Image 1 (cartoon, rainbow, N blue to C red):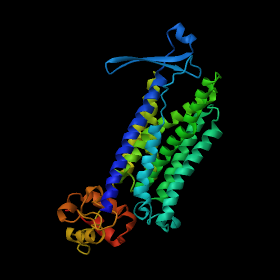
Image 2 (image 1 turned 45 degrees about the horizontal axis):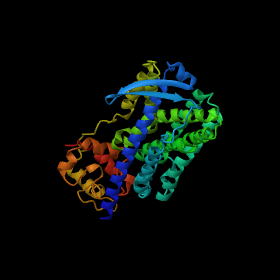
Image 3 (image 1 turned 45 degrees about the vertical axis):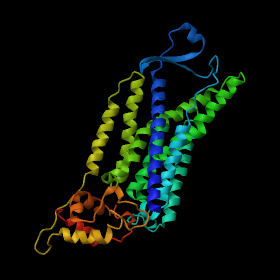
Image 4 (image 1 turned 60 degrees about the vertical axis):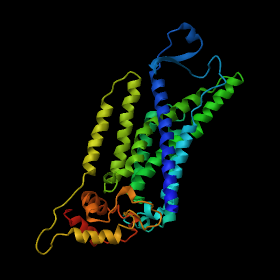
Length: 401
């Protein structure tokens, strides 16, 4: 019952997380679109009132007239709309999911016994958990310092973008060396999501509060607060597509369970940012197809890198083929503790991904996937059941029928 309650709580947290993320990302994308779609005001009266830009739109059977003031609107309404709780709810619910799943079972999800670095392979579960949380904290600190030092006045944002991209490639590499692929992709996405939420919490909202406070006492707001807020908002919009992809990546083991995982991860981030760049420019009236072309080319490269590599299987008389019965013995010894209708492994209320491996019919339904995740050392998670190299080789040689 405890495992079931944890699983049900995880379901509710995921629901909350997805709903909050949709609301936050949708609002963020809308405001980026709005900001880039503004045109100089047509009315002389609006220009005198300090209107910087305006946009007319039609939606839902009505017409909308949006106007933007930079820092000095003629009046400030009492019911001023603020956009921040969606961002905070997204991060808090996401971290809660990470804590209840990954941090509560670090031996399953965070320990990487097959790591190339000896000290990583020797990590205990709690140590891997501490390092995972440190990734989020240090990632934000490094990103924030890059922004502060490279482009404090928003005059070197191009160089800053390159620096942030390099930072994320380094994060991708380190994550894939320290953690199993599934966790590495998630943690890298969480680093970006943490930077996004922290941008809202530490920069965007405080700057806007200072601007509002200055207006209320009749002072001229500091224009730098607005510029810094926009800089961080722009960064957030480029993080959006990669973060969404990485949050979904745990369903597709072929992208994170091979030796090229960190390269695939880096290319996904760059591809997502390039595709997002096209839409940002498109809202400004610029059509630059080179960006989606680059994004798609990178996706093709990813498809090539992630494709399964299978060598010839020895069918000589001295090395007879592996039978399904032999594979079933391995499944019973190493896999069905979790992958069963009623798992015996503590902490599992149901078979992961709904994949039970108790019968030949169930195993023969997806032989390619089984061979792939076992050959790449992704399964068993953390090799908790101590699957041997000989058993992995046997499954690799199994014809799957």
